[in-house]
Length: 85
Image (tube, rainbow, N blue to C red; front, side, top):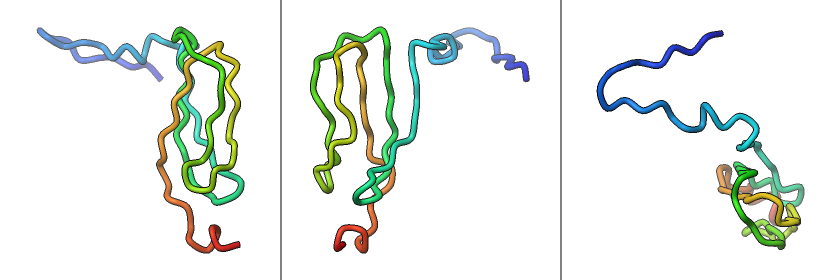
């Protein structure tokens, strides 16, 4: 499949198309409550060590080593049934 971008004055090709291995996108699901997240990782960003916990149930989803910048965004609300058990 070949992507041919439109041409014209003022048009900019999105940077994401050229990042390749600099940016990774994944979907992550919390094993405890079922909340869904979009995970973005930038290899070129400076970051710090730490961890990310699910804001709903406080389960640790990932521990960061500081090599890349990682961001999480909640995309799927957890089930109420999953929180009760």
